[in-house]
Image (tube, rainbow, N blue to C red):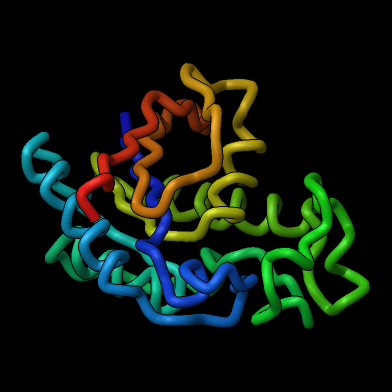
Length: 191
C-alpha cells in the first residue's frame, strides 16, 4: 500500500498580492518559507520519511519541496498549476465565480476538464510506476483541488475550505485507486 502526500506550495509573492498565478511563477515569501518549515517539523515529528519526491517545475513548488525533505526529487512539468492564459499576473478579483469550467480557454488557458485530466493522469502514472511506500508530491492549489475532485467518490475525508498553503493531503493508493485519508492543515497563526 502506497501513501501519497500531495502538498500545496508555500505562500508566494503573487499569493500575498492576490494575483492569479497559474503557469507563471513568483517566489516564496518569508511567510511561505516559514510555512514550509512548519510543515517539515510536522513531518519530522510524525516520523514520515519519503522514498520518492516529485515537484511541479514551478520554482515555488520545488523551493517548497526542498524545505520539506532532503531527498533527491524529480521536477515534472505536468504537475504545474492550471493554465489561466492571459489572466495570469492579473488581480484575483478578475476571476469568475466558481466553477471556472471552460472560462479560461477563451484567454489561451485550460478548461477544468483539461487540468483535472492532466493532473490526475500525471499523478496516477507516477504512483503506478513507483515501488515506493511514501511519495511526496508538491503542486498547486487548483491542481490539487481538481485531483481531489477526480477521486472525491473514494475519499474517506472531505475538504471543507480552500486549500491552505503547505497543507498535506494524505492519500492511500491501492488497486489503482486514490483514497484521501487525511488533510493536515498547520497552525500558521504565529506568522
